[in-house]
Length: 219
Image (cartoon, rainbow, N blue to C red):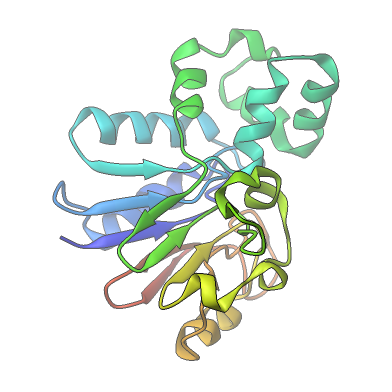
């Protein structure tokens, strides 16, 4: 069994599918998606449909909630939350569903996202969307840090982390920065290459294989 991690697809279903094809994902493999599947890109609905298709066909997936999924879930509750989501790329998600109203998004998509996890542990790795507050008694209870924090290094307790690595997304890194972190065997590795960004060194979906720490950048 191989284990792969992808983060911050941001509505780019074409790159997501290209990544799945590049690694030749099989049902015996495990795929961990570190949140921000939706918003900003052109086809959030397509990304979610791909997830549904994989699950229905027996693939081994674990999807995490990113801050964009959380904004989507919160947007169902009140207008202030809805406005925050819309100005942060939620408008693109609505467009992918060919609607201007969150109420028109079929409930199966809401239920899918509502079933995502905030963190996942697998062998010698901990997966979260943004960061993990290792300086409190229960690091997994600080959901705000898990979803939003931009400086994960500030929250690292090396004794608590031990021999494990923290793999996350949320804060776009250049391809060089991602490769450098892996080459230096750092304990905290970000695999968000800013799929929605157009500047040099960014704009790819990054796929990491955990057993080898090899990465591919799909553009």
